[in-house]
Image 1 (cartoon, chains in turn yellow, brown):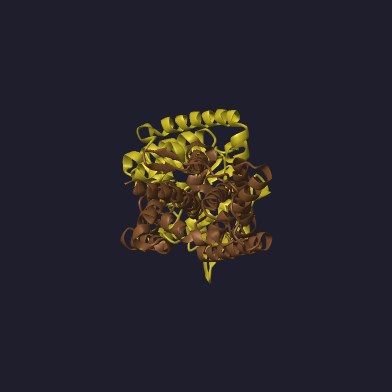
Image 2 (cartoon, chains in turn blue, purple):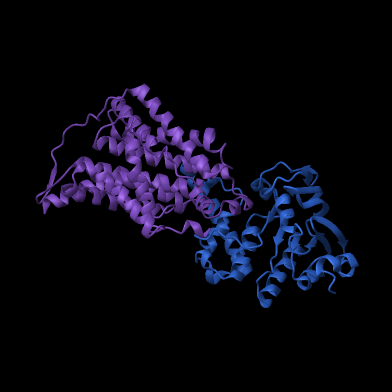
Length: 252
Length: 288
């Protein structure tokens, strides 16, 4: 699957949070988006996933213009995001969180629920099996039946990744997956990302931990004040003068 | 002693009415995020639906099913025609729209059925006696009807895929959307349940007293009071609080007189709001 964004723009009043940003990403690829706080990175994610409408530009998935689709349909098309501060269905258990995110549940239709209970039970056990696999993959077994609101910050990050995986994504947008996570868990999450990437899932990752991100990403896009100011291989991009200027405030 | 037990039984029956209507309110509040002031008039519709169904078929069960279906239908239509269009507005806009929907329903029922009171024509049954306490068989049937409605709602909420998704939307609507959960599917299921439950509550109230176009509106305050007392957004809390409130109202009658028992609901609501805004089982809304 290939994502192409062209000239995405989003203004709040006179302030252009995202200003004519264009780039591409595809399944199997892994690109990083970096930039100082307030550069418009999270706003860009919201535009791509349909959370914000924006003032122009197009989002194309495999050639189809999806700029007008609501967020849940973009998610079903295979493009799923996470949030800077991990979100979870706090009153649902870890297992229920994962089950809720599985796609194509005919049990979400009240009529089928009462008329085709056997079919829905079969579907439920198939979903439950996938959930078990996901829980095992992320090593969340010990907390599987705990209400997710009670998890630690790091466990919530893992759960978030798990919930994203349940939607069978082709492209995952991670908003600061390493923020507030201890180094051991950063390695663990990086390992999961690498494994999934090797299986063909594409990633776009916003991250301030440049070290961890550079080890993962094949390409970096640098944003500053809403604009894309540089793109290229991590080692090369990070050496550019305008990037150092924007990102490090010229201190380096 | 028998006198007090009788009062408690009467309280439990009216508590079921309050609890079911509070359940409808709390479901809508938890998932669609606004206080639905049309709940009372949906109850009235359920009562008229059951009345008509009972007159035609002679069966209370058939009447109850017709009433519940009418409530569910109005719930879904209200969502599709009104609340869905206002989904991105503030919850004050939704509240005002629901007051308007309530007025429309009430006026329509006034035109259709007249403003005189109607009653369910039920055969008189000799009460059973448990020691000195008379038990009305009808009360048991009504409790059974309420119990089945509760079983369906809680069964759907906690044992089915759509219930899981409803609870997911209640927890975090934005996250539900990025997880590919269709808001429409969840909302339609919500309004079917909320409408049907309110209608069953209305039917029980109609059988116990009289059916009139204004009955539901008059029952709205205790329903809201119980929803807040139980912890807004908590289905279990709504039912428990409804039962407590119903019993409290009846047991208070010898002291304050029945005209004022409705005031008790208001006092409870104020007290909860001032002292424990999260209610019995609630999560603190402000913490989101």
